[in-house]
Every structure is written in structure tokens, then in C-alpha cells.
Length: 227
Image (cartoon, rainbow, N blue to C red; front, side):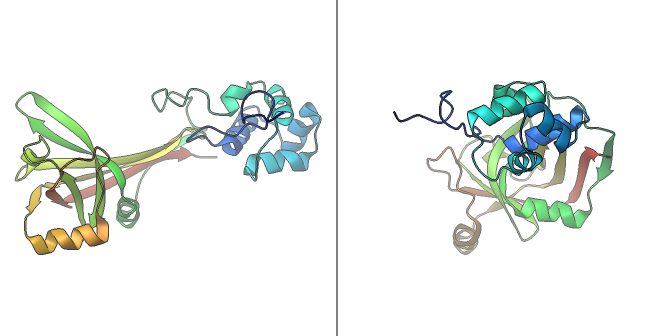
């Protein structure tokens, strides 16, 4: 009889955005266990624990159940149960260290593109709006709809922020850009951006108003485990 991954009979796979291997390693480290000690508790070879932590493939339910028992947790927790919860609800990193990111690393992370937040002021108060963006010519570039709140930021002081959180290790980083939003109006510039770094807004629709935020000030911070 055919089985589906995760139905309790077939080999479960991690859900979207999960990282089974890192959760296994993190939980083992929290308990202060070596791989050998974990393997002895689970009744398996230490090499298999190393394999599971590397996430080299699918971990069968039987093995995952044994690992969950050895690590005093549950299978759903190891598979990333609660991924819909707000990020950052875990415990502190071990011996956390807060440090400034070098400017070159900030630019490197910005260059990866993706989703960030534009922060600006309105008559109702401050507002933050997520956008798909690209980083071109030392500037944040995004598209929005004509007449939208984001189109209205042109000419004003704004901030732009991106971050990443590693829930498995309770570590992360954030980068903040401050600058003055500018319109991208010439067809030549728009075509250049469209062909080389179009951010493709997820909401879809007509979003043909291009906005650029040249980097005025740039800073970044990272929190990591000191161990």
C-alpha cells in the first residue's frame, strides 16, 4: 500500500522552511550530549546520528521517533512544528554575542535581494510595508502601484530593513538603510532595471511605479552564539 510522507507510516520529510538536521544538533547541544551518547540512548549507530544531523536524506519515522525520545522532545518539534508561529519565540542563544556587521558584509547581504520592509511616516503615524526588492548601484529598488502609499514616499526620508532569523540556533542578523526615496522615471533606466534586476512583486497586478532608495547610511548587527 502506498504511503504519504508524514502520515505516520512513510518516511517523514521536514515541512516548508524547516531544518531537521539543525534542530537535531541544537537539541543535542542543549542537553549537553555527544553524538555517541545520543546514539546510545536511541539504540543506533553514532554514524547515523551524524547522517541525520547533516540532513543527507530522508529520516525514517522509526529512527526519528528514537531520536526524539533520546533527545527528550517530540517528532513534531524536530520536524519544525509551530513554523507558523511568530519568529524569535525560542530561548536565548548560548552565550549570545551582539556585534556590528562590516559594511561590505551588509552590502553583500543586501545584494541577495528578496523581501525587505520600507519604513516611512504618514499622517496616521509610522508605517512599515514589505516589498520585493533588488539592490543595484548601491541603491534599493522596488516596484509599486501608482497612487499607493509606497508611491507616496518619493522625495521623503525613509528607512529600509532586512533581517534573517535562524530559529534552530536562536541567531540572526538585521541590516538598516536610511536614505531619500527617488523616482525612476526614464524608460531607459526602467528597462535596464527590468532586464537585470526586476524584483517581481508577489502581489502581482500593475506595479509600474519604480522607486529607488540610494544608500545614505548603512548599518547592520548580528547576534550569535559565543560558543
